[in-house]
Length: 325
Image (cartoon, rainbow, N blue to C red; front, side, top):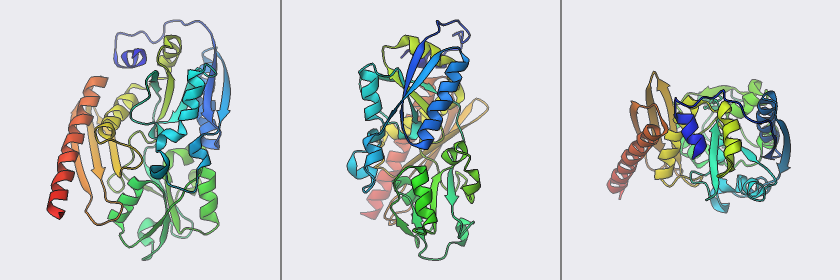
C-alpha cells in the first residue's frame, strides 16, 4: 500500500511538490466527527488544496437502542462513508481510528494516521469527582464491552448500564441524572473543548485504552495514489506504528466491539512497549493481561510485536478457561 510504504520508509521525501487539487472529505455529522473533518480540511487547505465536506449519517448513528456488538459492530460507522468513496462522491474519509474495523473491505486503504490525542479514558461525573468515591451499587454508563470488563475488574459492585449516542447525547443523559457517572474517551472531550467535564483521567494501569483510541485515521480508495501522496505530509509515524501494533493485537484476536479487548502501546526511545488485556463483561473471571516490547522502526516490526502479544494473550485466556471449566 503506497501510504504505508511512504509512512515507514525514511527514504521518502515528504516535501516533494504535488499538484494542487480539490478534495471532498466524507464524514459523519456528529459534532466530534465534524471537528475531525474540519481539522483535516484546514491542514489540506494550508497546503493550497481546495477541500469540501460531505456530511453523512451512518447506521451506527441511527441505531441507539441496542449495543454495537448486537447490531453489526463498528463497521456501522464507516459503511456509508466507504460507499461515498467507492462511488466517487468523496476522495477521503476521516474516522476516529478506534471505530475503524481491523480489516478494511477490499478496495480501501488506511492511508494516513495523524498524531494522537490523549488515548486514555475519562471519568465524567458531577456527583463523584473521584471514581474511588463511588458508593456500592452506583450506576455507571457505557456500552463498550472493554470498559464494562475493566470496570467490573475494578469495581464488581457497580451497576453498569448501556449508554449509546454521540458525545453530546451521552453528556445530556448524564446531566439528566440517569447515571452517577459515565466513561468517555478523553480525546473527544478535549477536541471539543469539554475538558472541564473530565473529573478524572484513568491511567492505562487502571483502565487500558482501546486499540487506536485518540488517533484519527484517513481512509481512501486503494488506487488513489494522488490522495495518498498528499496525505503523506499529515502522517505521524510514531502514532502510525503504535496503533498498527495495537490493531494487530485486535486483528489476531478477531477484534470487534463484541470483544472485551484492550490494547495500548507507547514508545520508550526506539522500543515499543505494548500491553493487552482481555476481560469478562460478567465479572466472573479475572482480567487477563499480557505485555511485550520490541525495537520498532517500521510497520512490519510493529505488526509483528502486536501479533506476538496477541498470541500470548490467546494462550493466557485459554489457560484461564481451562482452569475455570
